[in-house]
Amino acid sequence: MSKRTFYTFAVLVFVLAVVIPWLAFRGSGDANTGAQEVPASLKKGQALFETNCGTCHTLYAAGTDGNYGPNLDELLAPNGPPEEGAGEKQIEATVLNAEKNGVDSNIPGRMPPGILNPEQQKEVAEFVAAVAGKG
Image 1 (cartoon, rainbow, N blue to C red):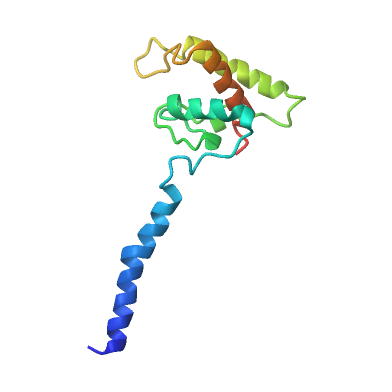
Image 2: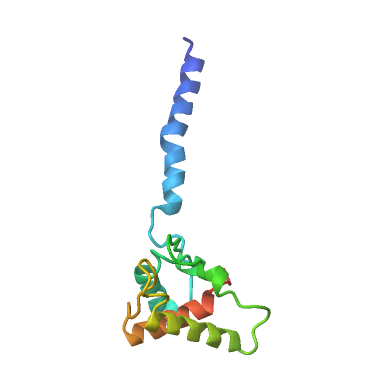
């Protein structure tokens, strides 16, 4: 075996064993990598959503990819241009209602009511209303 073949093989092994895994893990090694930067006033709602809602719901701005509940970017996307925040207020009311009362909570596996306290519900609802469908 010549030295040139050996060096070529060594570089190939290095790329496959070190560079590719490093690139793969660099992008998703941080828990907050997928989360979108939001205004400071929405950060608490974002953190609450990630922790309490992200397992079930997908929401781009929170960096979550839920497995059970609906994709909130699709479900709550504003229809057309917003009318001076009217769309966000309607989305916020919808989210608050779901958080307070649950969604089909009598059916196993559906969203139960009262996962969060009222203050947390408001913060999450404001966050979701501000970012849903806009990512």
